[in-house]
Amino acid sequence: MDQTGSYPVKLYVYDLSKGMARQLSPIMLGKQLDGIWHTAIVVHGQEYFFVREGINNCTPGDTHLGQPDSILDLGTTEVSAEIFTEYLDSLAASKYGSGTYKLFEHNCNAFSNDVAQFLTGQKIPSYITDLPSEVLSTPFGQTLRPFLESMAINPGGNNITGQR
Image 1 (tube, rainbow, N blue to C red):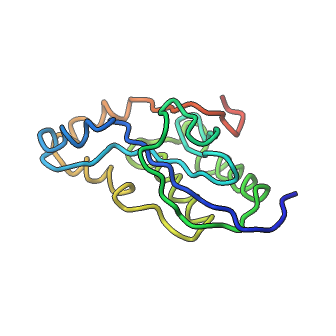
Image 2 (cartoon, rainbow, N blue to C red):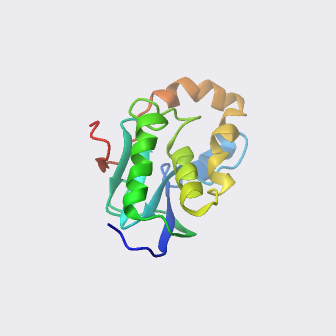
Image 3 (tube, rainbow, N blue to C red):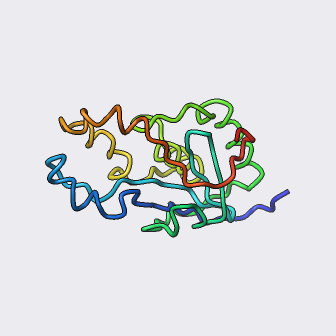
């Protein structure tokens, strides 16, 4: 059982476009996007994220995406690893189970936002959570929606709910 204490909480931010969104979005969408964001929460020595198969974890920075493009300090939490694991199990059984992922509505960033609020009481930055609505607000974004929704984004890691 964990001892009580204060644990750092980080948001790992990856640009799935590797800089291409910044270059091509003005031409394709008519607006500037700085990246196509994948996020993960790092706490208790592990990186946690949500993909089509459910909630996954890995050693921080050890996904197929490589090192994060940025790391944001979300503060600290007093939630122990044991209680956090119970919380993740409840999320996997209800809201973030295998097959519930939806690229524009229920994605890794929604998961990171929910987990950040649970751990710290703070949301992740809106430039990340608002990205899907920014893309879909453009005609080209609406046209690309079916194609983009069919794409599978899986940075690897271990499925913590045994669904893989």
